Each structure stands twice: as C-alpha cells, then as structure tokens.
Length: 602
Ligand code: ZN
Ligand code: ZN
Image (tube, rainbow, N blue to C red; front, side, top):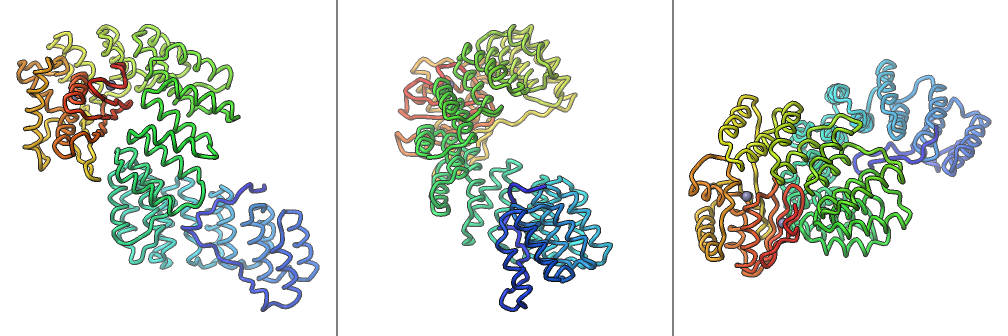
C-alpha cells in the first residue's frame, strides 16, 4: 500500500515535527537519523531500517518514532510497513499514535485511524493537542457525525476545547457535514482565531450555498483586518458569481492577484466562473484564453458558461478544441455541451453529441444528460419525442426530467401532455409548489379557471410550498433584493413612481401586457397591476433611478423569466438606452436596443 500523495491541510493542522535534533545525538543515532532523512523510496527506507537494527537501535523509542514518522507521513511511505514497526513498540507514546493516525487519514483510511484512537484509549496513552485535528478530519472524510460528536466530547474531556487547531478542525468537520450551526457555535466561542478559522467557516457556508452569509462573513473578516487566503477568496468568488455581485467580484479578483504567485488553475478557473455568472462573458473568455494551462474543470466552466449565455456554437467549438488538446471529456463537460445545444436550439448537434457521449466516449448517460435531452427536444416543440425519450430511459425518470417536459408543455401549449406529466410530478414530488403553479398557468391560458382553482386547493391540501421569486440588482457594491409586489425597500415609493412612468412610456410604444401570465381570475386592470409588480421589473426600476444614465444594469433572479417581463425589459432597454442583462434560473438574457440575445428562444 504505497501512497501516491499525502493530502495535508497544512493551514489547519500542524504535524508533530521530527523529535530528533541531530546535533544532540550520539554518533549511532546520528547516522541512523540522517539516513532516514535522505530516504526517497521504500527501498531506501528498508535499507535505513535494516541499518537501525544493525546499530542496535530497534528498542530505542526515539529511533522507533523517527522510523514511523518517515514511513507513515512521506509521500513514498507505506502504512502497512509503518504498522509493523509500530507493533514492535512495547509502550507507544502519544506522538507515535498521533503519527500513525495522521498517516492513516492522509492515506484515506479514517476507519483504521479511529480504531487506533480506541486502542490508544485502551492502552492508556493520553491524547495531546495533536491527537484531535487529524481525527476530526477523518470523521469529516467518513461523514461520521456520531463519531465526530463523540470525539468533540473527548476534546472537552481532555481539555483541548480552547486549542486553536482543534477548534478549526471542529468548524471544518461540522461544516463538511452541513451542520453549520455547530460550526458557527465553535467559531463564536473562540477566544483567538486564525485565518484558517475564518476560512473554515466561509467554506462551510459556501458548501451549503449560503452565499449571502459567505460574503457577510468575508466583509467582517476584512473589516477586522484579516488577510484572506486563497481558498477563502475562491469561495468568495463563487458567492459573487451566484449572487451576480460583479463589483465585489472584481475587487476580490484584485485581492487574489496579490495572494497567488504566477498562474494557478483553480484560482483562474474560479475567476472565469465569477465573470461569466456575473454576465461578463467576454472577460471570462479573455481570461480563459490567457491561461497557459487549462484542465477539464476550466473547460467545463467555460463550456457551461457559453451555454448559459446562449452561445451554443462557440461552446461546441471549444468542446472540439478540448478534445484536440487531448483532454478526454467527462460526464460534467457533456452536461454543459448538451445544455449549450438546448439553449441555442441546436437540435441536430445535440442529438449527435448525445450519440458521441455514448458510443465514442463510452460514457453511460446520467439522468442529467437525459434531462438536457428532454429539454432540448421539448423547447424545440418536439414534445412527443421528448416524452418517448423519457419512457425509454434505463433509469426511473426523476422530477427534474418531468419538470423539463412540463415547462415545454407550457411553452408549446399542450394541455393534454401537461396533465399526464404533472401526474408523474405530483407523485414524485408532491411538495414542489412551482409545479402546481406551472400547471395552473397552462390552465389559466386556456381560461380553465375551475381547474386553476382545483390545482391551488390541491397545492394547499398537500402542503406544497412555492419558492418565492426574487430579483437582485447590484448598485454601488450593494445587492438589493426584491420580491414580487415588494413594498419593503426603503426606496419603494420612488420605485413604484418609476414603474408608473415606465408604464406610460410603454403604452406610447404600443405595449400590450401579456395578462395570460397572471394566474388569478381577476379583472384586466388588476392583472396589469400584478404584472407590474414582478420582482424583475421592480429591480430594473430601482436600478434606473439609482444609476447614471447609460450605465448597464445587471439583474439576477431565481426563477424563470415570464413572457411579460421579457417583453417589458426589451422595451425598457430601447426607451431608456440601457443594456440590461438578466440571469434567470436557466440562462442569461442580454437586452439591448429592444432586442434580447436569446432571440426569444428560451
Ligand atoms: Zn414577470
Ligand atoms: Zn431573452
């Protein structure tokens, strides 16, 4: 069992250093230790071990420890061999146990490390400050929360609850298990913190997708004078991307440049991802082109980014460049490629790629790939083919796949298929309010108000919850969030005044609201009022009154854009001479001079 690499989180854990100070040693020991320090392979190590025995040092505790350290913690080491040496020691000292446990965890064998900890307890060796950080890391690797909590108990029992490295490891372990409240509690109780403490908590928030909290914490960290490390900045960039916080993303770019040296694939890839998700595709592309070395993740980010911006042809070109460069596509890249075809309406190309995935690159299609294909066919109006594909899937179709078909039914007004599709959906996921809304939308279009009412009753009866729609817009580095019919913003009065003004101008341009989007059987005037209050329009009105004339507006929303918001945004871009980019749940829409980059295909 040789280790290819030793994964160390050096910022979180400190290893017990070699106990040998060569100058204080007797000549025999000195010879043996300097031999060990020079070892670069197991063969050399075995020779050094043999020499140690020859020198009569096999019962020497210090020599045994040096042997274990070299064999367990070196990249070329072997845990089986280290164990043989360890078992020869009559009374292993705590640092021998610590080294072995750390070795097992570096070797991705946390179970043996935990068993050894048990043995350590049984043999009466007292844990020290170096015992818990690797063990907690092991529990995180194992997702062993029960064991992790027990070990947390031992941390208290043996008095290491104030040890910085142990605390950082606790934040990390709970964070990796998604138990953010425990991570925060440990963090809040720390008397002294290090950059790694902040980094561990920010990573924990990022893992759960709590982007606002990530940025909030980063703000506090910076205001307290801490200098963020690379991993924190990467998580911050990821948050900026998700929230569309371009200004903050840009300044994080600046920090990152001061933190990393030379080219760094992970950092550069996260920068590309941030710029693309904040609507700056060209900036993302130029960073991509300037990278001397790209890996499959970089390609994957770029291809999905092009897909999100509706640049299907460019995504396909990049995909073929990637293959020419000798990088074998994986299933994640294919998800990007297929969704690129879907967003750009490239039906034939999409079907070809689906074949290449299976027959040329011999990847077993996942449910995500099928989802993309259903989306591709559905959007193009090929509803029967999409339905047929679902029926032919080798696995049970999930709610995501059926939802793609239901959306397509809405776009192409197919009530019959929508009804049967939603039966599958309600069975699989009866609590997703969005599905009920989608179906009632389809009924509302056909003026089937009785059916709309029934759907809403079912929705309440089954306790389904609707994800509240919101739109965010960044103005002077601050994100402003609006929900539908929002009155809570301090500038609400001015926002509604602006909307009123927009309404007048739109009427002059001959705009007629698409009231079929409104789900309630209310009169036309009320429908228009409800449409005006959509979060996207509120966010755009707010940006219009808060930014200088001609400056671009960027909105990020969590749901799909409705037809009326799409129409209105096109007209606003023309009347107010603004470039407006909106990222909805699926993709980007870049509005300019009365037109949208999606060409009304979305
Ligand atoms: Zn809308
Ligand atoms: Zn569009």
